[in-house]
Length: 360
Ligand SMILES: *Cc1c(COP(=O)(O)O)cnc(C)c1O
Image 1 (cartoon, rainbow, N blue to C red):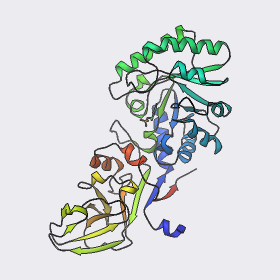
Image 2: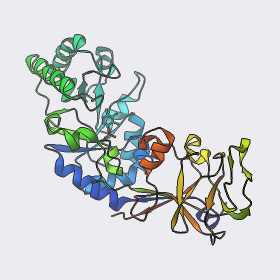
Image 3: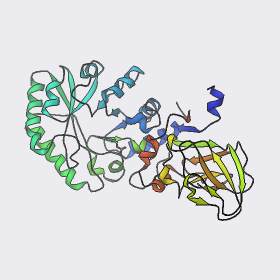
Image 4: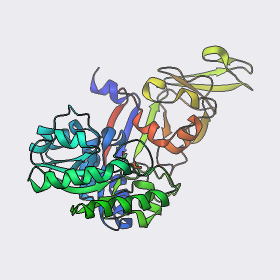
């Protein structure tokens, strides 16, 4: 397909100016340093662009899950400190050490397989039972890390944990206890870190030396606030329009019938592009200056919407955006689909043409 063909179809626009503004807001809230979490390709916004923008707007660290993501950032010339926190035992830890990538260590087994020179963040589970050592295993892990540090094999740079949800008091108390155990074992980590976006915005007592924010960079505020700006806009051109009589069934299984004589427009994107099929009965787009409901099932590659008169092939529908012009937001689509905004922005398919604005 030619570039012109792609550009005429569905389009994802990423606004790095919004990412920069969001980063500055989060950095202003953080009591310590800010880590820009760019896992899952920067929450679907492009890891490299989000990382560069965030570093230019106040972030000091980058965070990713796997070592591979961190190596990609290094290969693209980013020299900032990077932490990688989720790796199987067979991951390329040698490359991580060669490229100065800090590694989270959740267990004695993980500590044992690290090559000499590793910089580690010991990872404590404070109540998710997902990643990190339990408090039972923690003292042994701290002692082993201290021994490894004394022998010059590793450097313990940090201690980290992750919050399960808005009830942060118990986890924060456990984290403090974990830090005390680490200090008692002789460790002197420079960076203790616990908070992600929600706690960065609402719970200063969880900030410690650094906060790790991902969702907030791209404008998702899990605490429900509205001070951050959505960084992604999804648009699609109208392919066909038709007039239908009251009672006309639309789409697979005829789940929707026109309640009156009306107009329909066909958009060339569907669940393969990341529109959640389950959002169909409630979802809307902005088209011709007004909100238009999805009519019938969202198909794999196609979606029909009910419009007013006057919509023409070639007109542009805004599926979601920051919301300033009356278009739905990612949060609206998440509500319609019964999911989180995170799942919408990380779930877009490969087909929409990607376009970046506002970069520095
Ligand atoms: C994803 C993730 C973050 C970032 O969380 P947001 O809520 O997106 O800011 C921070 N820490 C860990 C361990 C994560 O997995």
